[in-house]
Image (cartoon, rainbow, N blue to C red; front, side):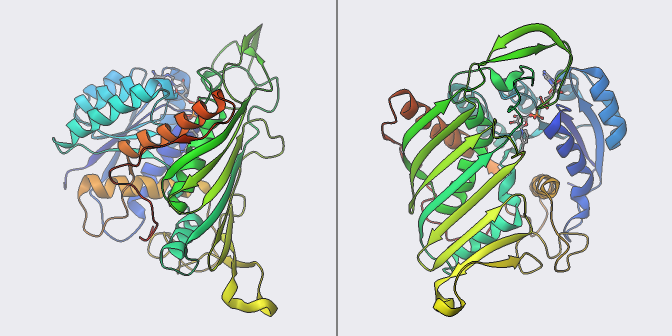
Length: 407
Ligand SMILES: NC(=O)c1ccc[n+]([C@@H]2O[C@H](COP(=O)([O-])OP(=O)(O)OC[C@H]3O[C@@H](n4cnc5c(N)ncnc54)[C@H](O)[C@@H]3O)[C@@H](O)[C@H]2O)c1
């Protein structure tokens, strides 16, 4: 493809803005030169936000109905960044219209919808259409570096993994009700941040084979109803009425992975932890820890260092680690890294695939990966509904049971 690639983003909320910025920057990352990228439209049902975001991020126009984006001849690539329950209708409509689609996680808010979307993606692939899901954290250099250290034998086989994703966006009872608080058990914190954490855990330790100890809690049971447009965690004018919170504020479970075991814990009511994602992996040859609040480093302990020099040491990420050399504008050691850059690398990988460039970045996760992710979350919900019993997952035909490849 040498014609310009026209891009649109549907959903101008928190993550939508990260997508808008990412499409701007993606062509500037890495060497292969992409065809020109045209920033065409921002779509949001709330017009003031769509209009303002289009101006801020330099998109040519805004739309209030996704169908206008599906019908537009000058748009090739679309990010879908709206509430999970809306993904299916919009994604299927876009794929039918021949658009390449990057859909946010989790793929949907029901397995039925997710499976239908994967089937639609398969049909679209026959027409050369790309459909991918944004499990953004695989682009974090620290997590990609850990995967390399496991896969190349430096750390060796995973023995156990501990992960937590604590957030505080719902920790105040004054935060209004929104789509995040509606749905069946498991569609709350588990789907929202647990989908990321589960994906990361499998990225490092292989597919989940069994979950147990599922436990959900809804600690803030009523929330005020917003009088207007409300975004994640933001205060908004309220009507004076309240709505019942339907899903989980907190979730935890244990898992048996392709290699090793582990426990995962997620929250949206963890005051003081706006984005507290921490993963620690204990392996045959040592251990490693990554903390989203210090994303430019990993803590590494290698048994071969011996007892006198052993223990955790800080490794600052730089050009020797994934996604830095040749990718960042300044790709020198010690320049740092931020969460918004993960969206940029994700967008770049998507454009590499659409444009068919030589030497592309590793592809984004597929809709089938998105279905698998939701199957794990559904198994956690089944475990939680039955006192924490063990639930076995069927192995995927292409099961990622050992981590042996690079990022
Ligand atoms: N990858 C990540 O790190 C990450 C981070 C946050 C959110 N997400 C995902 O992104 C998606 C959106 O989350 P968010 O936090 O940005 O939500 P949000 O509530 O902040 O924004 C959603 C926006 O969608 C708009 N909208 C609603 N219905 C629409 C429709 N039919 N057409 C167009 N726009 C519509 C709303 O007006 C709102 O502005 C979710 O799937 C979420 O899980 C991913």
